[in-house]
Amino acid sequence: MDWSRPGAAVRSLRHRFSPRNAAEVVAVLVLLTVALSTLSSSTRRPAGPLQSRACEFPAIFNFGDSNSDTGGKSAAFRRLLPPNGDTFFGRPSGRYCDGKVILDFIAEKLGLPYLSAYLDSMGTNFRHGANFATGGSTIQPVDTRIFEGGFSPISLDIELSQFEQFKARTLELHAGKSDYAKSSLPRPEDFSKALYTMDIGQNDLHATLKSMTEKQALASIPNMLNKFAVAVKRLYQQGARAFWIHNTGPIGCLPHYFVFDPPESNATDKNGCLASYNKIAQEFNMQLKTLVSKLRLRLVGTTLNYIDIYSAKYTLISEAQKHGFGGPLEYCCGHDGDYTVYCGQKAIVNGTEVVGDSCSDPSKVISWDGVHYSHAANQWVANRVVDGSLSDVQVPLTESCRESIHS
Image (cartoon, rainbow, N blue to C red; front, side, top):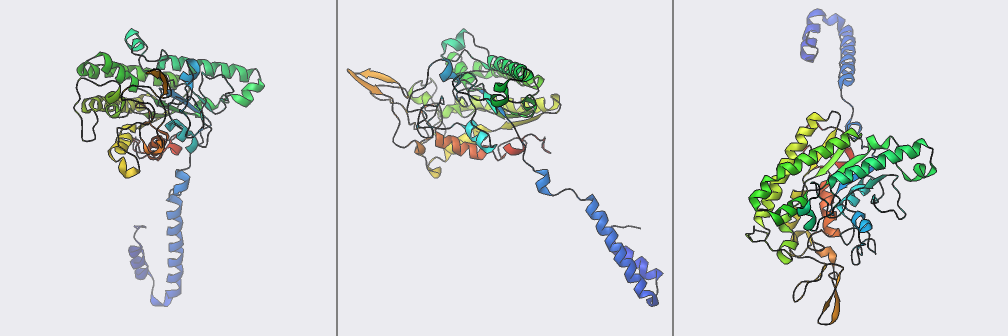
C-alpha cells in the first residue's frame, strides 16, 4: 500500500468494511491519521533556529596590512599622530583612520573586544586574540624593491612567525599555571576554535605598479598567491579551522594615485577611478577566489570564507552621494595644493608651520587620508560584509565556523 496517498487507503477501507461497520472504519481512519502524523514528524528536520545557531568564537587572530592594523606599525616604528583616531577614540589608536577599521566592526559583531596589536606591549590584553597586521605589510617577503618602495619589513611570513611564537609561549605559560596566562592570554583550546581573518595584498599590487609595467604586474600575481596559500597552510598546521578572507579593494579609486603618485596611464572609468589599476585588482581577486576554493578541498575540516570587499567598496564609491558621502575621490585628512602635507604631519611653508589636519566632517568622506577609508566608510562596508551576502558561500560572519551547503 502507498502510505503517502490517503485516498488509496480510504478506498481500500471502503472495500473491506460494510456500512454496518462504520464505527470500526472511523476508528481505523483515526489510527491511520495518527500513524501518518507520527511518521511525518519523526522524519522532519529540526527547525531553522537550531540550524543557524551562531558560532561561539572565543578569539580572533588577524593578519594583514594597514586596512586592519590596530596599532602594530605605530608600536613598532613611530606612533601615529592626531587627527588619526579622533572620531571614535578621541586620540590616536594606531589605526590609519579617524575611528574604527573593518576588523573592529567584525569584533563587535562577534561580541569580542577590539584586538590589541601583537607588537604593542603597553597595557595589552590578548585574552580574546591578537592582531598581527602592520601597516605597509605585503604577502611577499620583503626584498630591496619592496623595502625601497616604503613598505613594511614585516611581511606576512613574519606575521605568521610572530603568531607561532605567540601560540607556543601561550601554551608554555598555561602549562606553568601562570596567572598572567589565565587573565590575559587565550586558553589553549581557543586556538582551534578561533576565527582567523586575513586582509592583505593591496601593498603587493601597489609595489608592483610602482616598479613594473601593468603587464608585468599581472604576471606577478600567481607568485603572490602561492605565498598566500603557504600562509593559510601554516595556520592550518597550527590548528586554524575557520578562515574569513578579504579580497583587495578597488585600488584604482584611491585618491592617493591622483594627488601624490599619478600614473603614466590615466584612463578612468565612469566613477573617475583608474581603470587599469582596478583591472589588476580584479584579476588578483579572481585568482584569490579560485585559490580559496582549491584550499577548501585540500584542507580537511576547514571553513574558508572568501569575502568580496571589492564589490562593497566599489558600490559605495559608485553610490557615494546616495549614501550621504561627498565626491567619491575626495579625501579628508592632509593638504594638497600650493604645498603637500600628509595626514597628521607638519611642514614649514614660507616660514610658517602647517599641519595636515582633518576636514570639518569626516563622516561625509569615503577616504580618510587618500589611501585608507574613513570610520564612516568602514562602517558602511562592514555592515554589508558581516551578513554573508558578499561571501562566496553565502555564510554570515556569525555562522562562519560551519560549512555551507554551497561549498
